Amino acid sequence: MRPSIAAAVARGLIGAVFQPIVDLSTGALAAFESLARPLPGSGFPNVIAMFEQAEASGELWSLEEATRAAVLTAAAGWPSGVQVTFNSTPVVFADDRFPDSVIGAVRRTEGLSPQRVVLEITERAETRFIDGLSRNVDALKAAGFQIAVDDVGAGSSGLNRIMALRPHWLKLDRELVDHLDQDPYRQNLIRFFVHFARLGGASLVAEGIERVEELGALIDLGVVLGQGYLLGKPGARDQTVSPDIAAWIRERAGLRERVRLREPRRRPVSDVLRACMTVDAETPAAEAARPALADVHNPGIAVVSGRRCLGWLNRERLQRAALETPSLPVRDAPPEGATAVDFDTPLGDVIAAIVARDDETFAEPVLITKDGEVVGMAPVRDVLRAVSTGPLGAGGHTAPLTGLPDRAVCDQQINRMIAGRLPGDVLFVDVRGLTSYNHDAGYEMGDVLIQQVAAVVESVVRPDQTDGRAWHLGDDRFLALAPAGRVSAVIEELLLQFERTRVRTVSADAGPARTAPSLRVLVIPDAFQRVASVGELHRLADQLRRAARPSDGGSQVIVDRRDSPRDARLSA
Image (cartoon, rainbow, N blue to C red; front, side, top):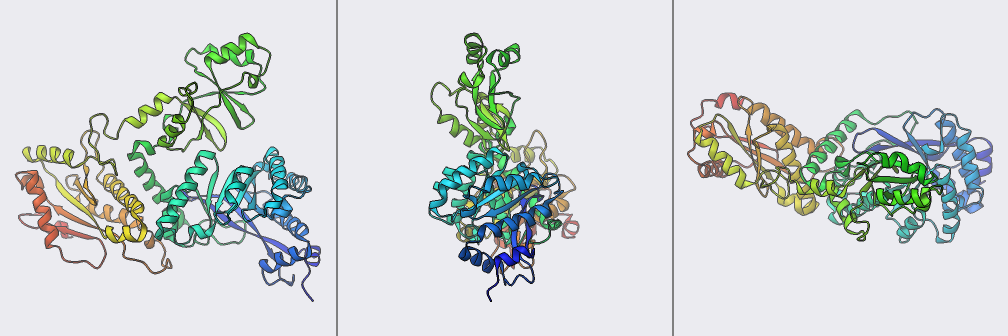
C-alpha cells in the first residue's frame, strides 16, 4: 500500500524542523526557516516523497495546513526578535482560504504576531497562479505578514514575479552560492541582487552556504543574511549558531566595514542622518503644520501611512496646504514623491538616486528607512559634502582603491623622519600570490583582498590623529611604521588578523584549498637612523625581497639584520 497523506495528518505524523537564518554582520540568529518532515511511522521515506504524493493526490492543502500547525505549536513563546519563516507552494498560497487560515492560526499562537512571520513563495511557481498570489500577498501584507520569494535566480520568470509581488525578503538560490568564491560571474550577479534589494528595501538571504569560503565572499559582497549547513542544519528550534562561526562572522564583517568607510562613496547614508518629523497621512493639514512650521529650521515632514512612506512635504507646500485646505488630510496635499533609501545604503547609491530626480524635487532631502519605517532624513547638501570629503580631508593624496595615503605622501613624511633621525621601525608589507588569486577568484575579489589588507595594516599600527602611519605604495605593497618598542607585537597581530581573513583557516572540513595569498613582511629596524634618504630605504627593501628564500605558501617575516643590535629580540 502507498503511504497516505490523510492517514499521516490524522495520526499527527507530520512534523517540522527549523534551520537558522543568521545575520551576516553580527553572527546572531535573525530567523528560523521551518521545514516539513514526515515522522517515523508515516510511511514516507523523506520529505520529497511526501510532497510528491500530496501533489499527485490533490492533498497539498491538508499537508501544508498540518505543517503550519506543527510549526506554530513549536513557535509558541518564540524568543523575542527572532522571526519564523515557512514555505507554501504556489497553488496553496493562491487558494482563497489561505489568508484567513494563516491569520487565524498565527493569532491563536501565544507570543507570536503576524509581524514576526515570513511567508515564503518559491520562485519556480507556475505563472497560472500569479493572480491568486498577488491578491493573497496584498491581503497578508495588510495584516502585517512579511513575504519572501524563495529560490531567486533559479527560474526564468523570477524577475517578473518579484515585480508583481514586491516581497520583503529575497532568498538567493543555492546554485548561485555554490563555489561563489571561485566564480566572478556569480559574484557580479549577486552584486546586482544586493544593489536591487538595497534600493527596494528588501532583506537578501543567501541559501545553501556550505563552505566557509562562500560565507566570506557573501559578507564581502554585502549580503545581509545567510542560511546553510555551515551555519546550522535543520533541527530543533532551540539550536544556536556556533560561537566560533559567529565570532568569525563579526570579525569579517568588521573588516568589511573598515574597508567600506575608507572610501567615502561606500559610507552608509546613516552617517549623515538627521531627525525627521513624520505625520500620518490622515492628519489634517492645519494640525500637521502647527508643530512643523513652529521650528524655523524644520525643512518639512515625511508623510506616512502605517510603516509605508508616501512622500515628502517641504515647508512651502505644507504652509500652502494649511492655508488653502486646512481640514483636508495631508495625503491630499499631495506630497512630493520622495526618495526613500535603507539606512545602510552607500552614499554613492544615494547620489545615483538623487541624480535620477526631476528638477523640481532635486533639492529635497532623502528619507532614510530601517525595516521599512522612516527613521530620519539626509539633506542633499550633507550627502554631497560627505562624499566630497576624502579620508584625509581636502588636499590629501590617497590611493583610490584603499583610501590610504599614497606613495607621494609616504615619501614626504619618511624624508622628514629621516631628517630628524627619529626612532622607529619600518615594515614593508607585500601580498604574495595575488596573481593566482585574481585568476581563481576574479579581479574584483582581488581588489577586495587588497582593501582588507589595507584595513588590517592600518588597524594594527594604530595611526594617530596627525600623521599617517600606514601607506599604500601601489599594487600589492604597503609601508607601515611600528610604534617604538612594539614591532614584535605589531607583526604578530598583523599576521593573526590577516590569517583570519583567509576563510579556509576557520574550518578543517572546508575542502581542498587552492593556493592562498600570503603576506611577506620586511622589517627594517631603526630605519630612520640607518638610511640617508627615502630612496635608500626603498632600495634596502628591494634587496631584502631579492634575497628572500621561497616559502611553503605561508606568510613570511624577514628582518634586516645588518647593523641592527636587536636581532635576537626580533627573532624571538
